Length: 411
Image 1: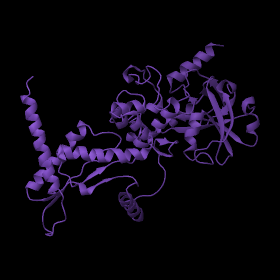
Image 2 (image 1 turned 90 degrees about the vertical axis):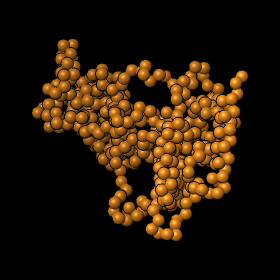
Image 3 (image 1 turned 60 degrees about the horizontal axis):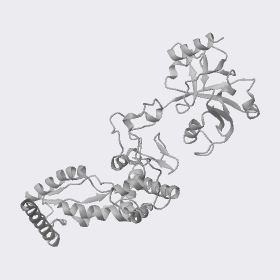
Image 4 (image 1 turned 120 degrees about the horizontal axis):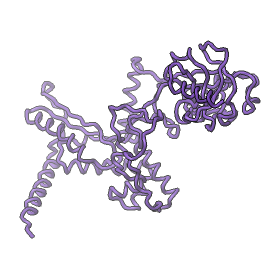
């Protein structure tokens, strides 16, 4: 076997290690503030890599840009500083730890997964869906960073195994703090082996585990608030009820690029006689079927409203329990986080029933020329889109016109 090539590589690796040792002993890359205030300075920073796994080739490629710039400016005689941060905030670490906990609880320790269940289905083979839950920004990537690191593996335990961890070690990662204890030191060691010219005295992790970084971030926000440049409030975003906070793109295990869809609610006032399903709850309250629309300008042409006969609807209180809205439970839950209900995130559900139980009832539709219009059945109404209540405008919607004609012909 020819070992000449291997010998050369071994020599180069030894030289690399020896030189890096000299750099570290002589503190080549430790940059202090110069005594000469007029000395030229240069600083490079790199987006903090996320500490939910090992660094990959993409990090190495991007880091070379900072590395070359810092070394070039140092050769020009500038005081060139290259600090480094390690990103531990956000939800990916917490989500991964929670997934491990759930898998241990469900499948044991170590987990015994069902056969042929460890791979995710090929997304390219799945049918397209028109649900608004998949409304995406086309400029965004198709995969979140969490998914990109997991490949096609379904379980978090399997992902950790693919990274080379043994079962005993993986169990420790069910504690989110262990991720912060494990990956930052390993990342620093890998970056040192790469030979980066970083002042490692100036490395840090984010989160309140690091009180210095935490106080720095707090100081920034308090300053901005004092200057009235920021304020506390709400805005529409993707929200995680489980974690009680917004869930941004890179924090999600799936659904990167998905954003909130804004609808206009049309309040269709339910008229007497009331259906049996909600007779008792209607006393002393105004009851509205709430239809979600993207085209409120077409309200003048409403002729009826559609419900899915086999879809389950709920009646829940809004406006300090003075009024009642009727829609799907999913839509009611969304509204509970938008200030409709008396308590944030809580629904006071008075009744639950199928759409067919209110078919034939009359509602008063705003801005239409008719005194009242009827609730009619439509099999294509989706429970995972809008509110499950659809206002019908045949003059502007061919689907509404066709569905209305079909019902007439069935007579």
